[in-house]
Length: 370
Ligand SMILES: Cc1cc2nc3c(=O)[nH]c(=O)nc-3n(C[C@H](O)[C@H](O)[C@H](O)COP(=O)(O)O)c2cc1C
Ligand code: SF4
Image: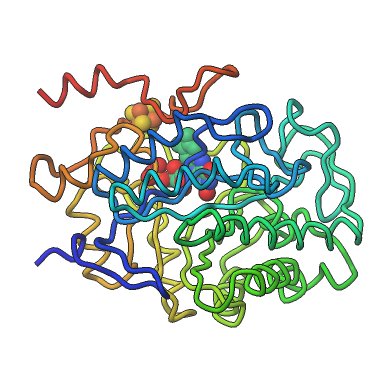
């Protein structure tokens, strides 16, 4: 029996199979963060392709946290009709979709944010420009911004919301001892460094009510000297249930060069599932459903991780860029692994290229299919 294609219940969210589209910044929005029709089409295509749950690319909760150009916004009620169209397009195909919400903190590009802030004033721990210390008023305002964003996600008709707490963005910055040197209630021991996350998730819960799915993508290791390490992130994992979180996706890495998070050169089954040790540790620390991302390419590896009980759901980013219908193809036995070459050429080099979710090796891959 295939576990991969068996249903799963996560909080109030009923999923038809165990495959998740991990958040993938699509760069398909206008200068105000309003999604372009391209994005709606992409989500409909993914839903048709059979993935059990779509997680949108990260959307900014406040203009001060817009990480890069062409990022979708969830920071204003004006965007509600456009956001609702995205949810509708997926539901029309009988799919499920949740929104990943984010604030870039110090990890925002020069093109989108003039002056960046971080929990502490830091210079070049992993991005190449200095950040000033966030003020207490800004902390309060941003907690509210996350809560309002969650409310908008719910009002727009999405099936849930995911907090981005990985890959070096603001919540990861609060958790990381490399960037958070505060000595007040927002910094210090890990219990204090997770205070911001606790306040954000609590304020979101108040807005969306007790049944609405709130997930988190948690960076468990920064992978940089002096950064967040497993011993501390396991304490964060253990606290998530009390924070009202319904499921946790495990990732890692804060470095701008993306090597740890978006691992290159996956050639064999032994290169796949490169964050598996994180899942094995997290299982001991929480009863929450675990979603594992990072380098899954073969159906056999996905099935094995589920059967061994290390994760409940398998999350894919690049394989669904190269083949949005991969879930159906795996289910029907048309192929047994993704064609993705793990080359990491799916991020546009220039504004307006609009190829973030289009694989430039498509022709090579199509040829390989024949
Ligand atoms: C083009 C691109 C954009 C991404 N955008 C996001 C994002 O918005 N939020 C996020 O949490 N991860 C993002 N990621 C990371 C993926 O979700 C995933 O964690 C990583 O690519 C490893 O999984 P994979 O081997 O299935 O690609 C992105 C990855 C790629 C390739
Ligand atoms: S460019 Fe294409 S083949 Fe390369 S990692 Fe991205 S999706 Fe995979």
